[in-house]
Image (cartoon, rainbow, N blue to C red; front, side, top):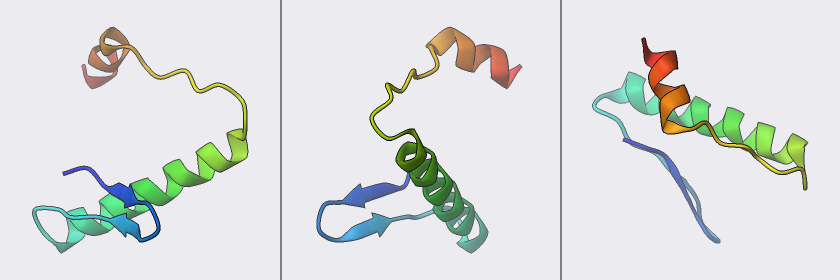
Length: 56
C-alpha cells in the first residue's frame, strides 16, 4: 500500500490496519519534506540493485 497525492485534493493513504496507515502517512510526510528541502536539485533514485542490497 503506497500513499499518493491527488492534485487539488491532498494525500490518500491506506494500510492493512490503522497502524500501517499511520506509518504510511508519516513516510509520505517525511518524503514530502525532503523533496521540498531539495528544491530544484536533481533527485537520484536508488537502483533496483541498491534496493536489493538494503533489504538483505
